[in-house]
Image (cartoon, rainbow, N blue to C red; front, side, top):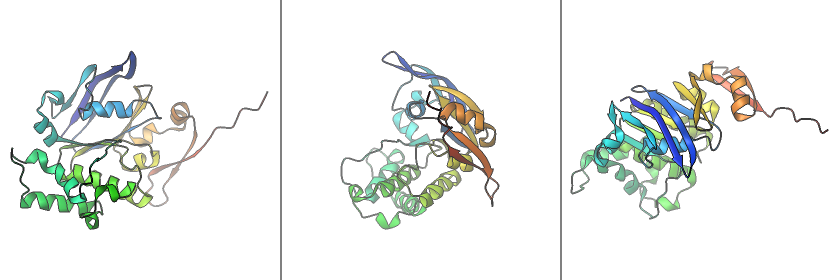
Length: 260
């Protein structure tokens, strides 16, 4: 399902955190948002998954205004993994993942065989089936992240919003999780810090700085040495992956200015 962000603006306490951002993701695409800390990526995504109402502009999913949908209908179409997702009570992993089925259940929530099948499959997909009976609060940061991704997948959304989904994950699970969400079916909108992962997995990238989009396009078109120097303050050397040919980046800091 297509998602569109149209001239979205967020102002808080007189500060404009997001400034008339417009972008879209077509059905089945993985679209990445990249930019330095404080650039507005998370604020933008909070509007997309309805944790924050924008000051102006709209988010449309399948052509409909997302904020006009009921909570249940919105949750059937869109699932999110916020950067600061937490669980305050020590539910089991199986119980956490089962929460993803709530939008598909009736007024009296009853777990069906289909719910169990979907949840078991989501846990297997993220490599966490062996954790099903563990308490969520006993898990490592990486294990918790995989479980929360499983919960989002169990929701069977048409659009999946991920804010730094590879936080706390080791390199193998970073690669596995992004490959999984790319092949899982929904349109994916993700904020990513790791530019090499973004280059490898994203169909399109939008670079955000100061609350505005400063570049959009394919990773190869967007991740230029000049742009990375301007936006991130680093020197970037573009190389091709020796096996896949995909764009990869090597970084260092620009030479320090000599002391006067």
